[in-house]
Amino acid sequence: MTFQVFMLAVALVLLLEGVGPLLFPNKWRRYLNELSHQNQQVIQRLGGALVTAGVVVLVIFA
Image (cartoon, one colour):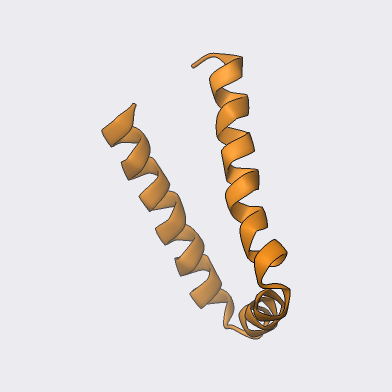
C-alpha cells in the first residue's frame, strides 16, 4: 500500500465521519450522549464489530 492510497483512505474516513455532525448536529449530540451512557461491554462489542467489518471489506477488495 502506498502512502498516497493510505492518505486517501484517511481522507475518506474523515469525510464520512464529518457528515453526521455537519448535517445533523442535534441528532449527533443525542447519539453521543446516549452512547456515553452505554455499558462498556456494549461499546467494546460495537467497536469489535466495526473492526471486523473493516477487515472483511479490506480482505474482499484488497
